[in-house]
Image (tube, rainbow, N blue to C red; front, side, top):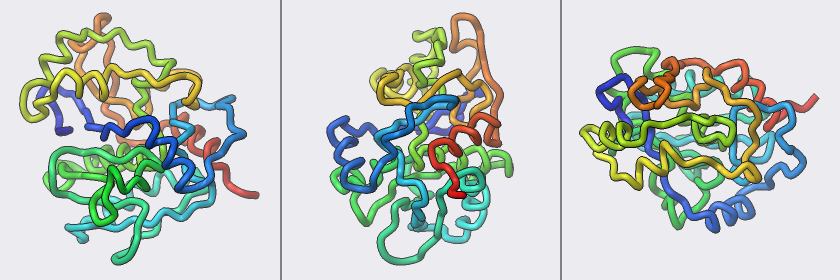
Length: 249
C-alpha cells in the first residue's frame, strides 16, 4: 500500500513485471525511440517502456469519474513538456485505465500497460486509492503526477543508477512492514532498494527535486539524507520528458 508510512514518507507500490514481458510490451505496443542514448538527460526512465513520441494515450476512469478532471489537471503537467497527449474516454480500449478502489497508489510502467497477461483489458493499469481521501490539493497533485510519470515510462528517481542513496535498510524494512503498507522484505527490495541497469535506463545526474522521488524521513538513510515532498515537476523532470518525447517543430 502506498499511503504515507506514518513517518513523513511517501511510497508507491510498483507492479512487478518480468523483464521478458516488458520487452514483449515494447515490441507489441508501440515503436520505442532507439536513437536516444540519454545524453543531457536527467531524471530516469526505462527506455524499453517509452511510448512512441506523438502518441495520444487514451485514459479511462473505471470508477469515480467525477474525480477525472482534477486528476487530469494535475497529470497534464507531463504533456505540457512533451509530445504526448492524454485523451479521456468513457468507453472502449484505453492505454491507461484508472481506478480509485483497491490498495495504494501504483501504475504500470509505460508500455507494460499493454500486457494483458499482467493487466487484463477490463481492469486497471493505475490505482489512485488515496486521492478520494486526500486532505489537500497538493497531495492530489503529488499522487497524480507521480503515477502518470510512471505511466509514461519514468522510473523512481531513487532507483536511478546515479542516485547512490545510502539506505539504512533495517530501518526501512521495519517502517514499511507496519500498516498501512505491511510490505514484505521482497516488496521493499523491489520498490525502494532496486537500482535500474544503466544499460536500459536513460539517466544522468540524480535529481533530488524530481516528482518521481520518494519522500522519506532521515531515519531511512545512513547519512540522514532526506528530500522534500515535491508536488510539481522539477526543471529536470520537464527537460527529461521533453528529451524523451520531443515536440515536433
